[in-house]
Structure formats: structure tokens, C-alpha cells
Length: 214
Image 1 (cartoon, rainbow, N blue to C red):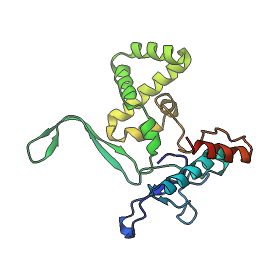
Image 2 (image 1 turned 135 degrees about the horizontal axis):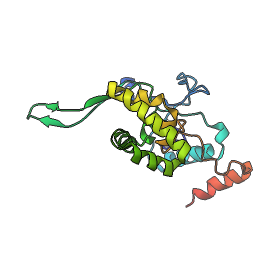
Image 3 (image 1 turned 90 degrees about the vertical axis):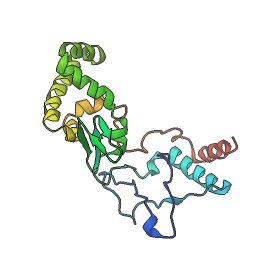
Image 4 (image 1 turned 135 degrees about the vertical axis):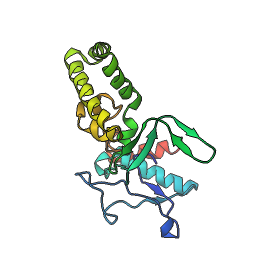
């Protein structure tokens, strides 16, 4: 789904086959109860179905004040094995590395936006060639901020070395690192994109009708 607009789901006859999880939250980012959250729309590929979805999405786009916040989160811990592995024909065995744990409740968007490769690379450089890292961060962020980020990197390196599987929890304790190494720090998925919100209602309707003809 696009972040702005109704959520789509299968709405199967057998409710046991329904895997939809509502992303809607309140102002405190707590998941809304099912009876308080907007219902998901059944997938409808017909012309009429796609037109209704288009209109509803455009109305949310042009009226940001009416949007119910969305925040997708992991509903259970996710375990990711990192490091080289072998296959003996029957099972896979990990030789080196560790298992990274993404805790339940972690923002899916936050994880997708975090630049893991750049972060891990700088962790290694901080350990092996600290002067090189300091010069890089000073050029990128300015001398004062670069020193603060470098200090946080050195501190978090020690925490990760003790318990590499909980890297995510360690990084969360250093908000500066989250900001520097994230391409987007907004966790509410349907915020922003306030195009045309100041248009009169008549103009919004006219714009929606015109774009539908393209």
C-alpha cells in the first residue's frame, strides 16, 4: 500500500486466513483498537474499485488534518543470522558471526531507513582508523558535531562488542547516531506530503476530477 490512503487487505471468508495487522495509532503512537481504527478495504482491481481507492487517497493527500496516523511495527522479535554459513546438503550451519535481534515493536520504517552499511563501516573505521573517521565526520558534519558523533560511535562499539545481537537496542540509546545514519527519521508513515492542503474544497474536488482523466 501507499502510506497515504486506505489500507488494502484480502478480507477472506475464513477469518482465520486474515493476516492483516492495522498500522493505525493514536497521538501517543499506541495501536488503535480494531473498533477505533479505519477498516481496511478489500482488494478490488475493477475500474470502479480502483477509482474509489484513488478518490479516497487523493482526499487524504489534500486534507492531511483528516489522516489517522499509521505506524507499522514488528509484532514479534525477528532473528537474523549474520556471518558466513555452510551447507552440507541437509542443513545450513553458521561458521562465524552472530544473530541480530530486531525486537517486537521496532518501527518497520525506521529499520528500512537506517543506513546499516554506512553505520557498520564507520564502526569498523572508528576501531581501526579513528583519525580517518574523525576527519570524515568533521568534513561531513562540522568539527564540533563530528566529534560528538565519533564519541557516540566509540561508545556504542563497546556495547555492541559485549552483546552484538542487541545492536538495535544499543543504537536506540544514541539518538544522534539514529539521526545521522537514517535517511528518514519520521516514524509516522502518512505524515508530510501536504500538497494542496490550502486549496478551497471546490478546487480540491476539481483537481481530483481532473487528475482522474489523465
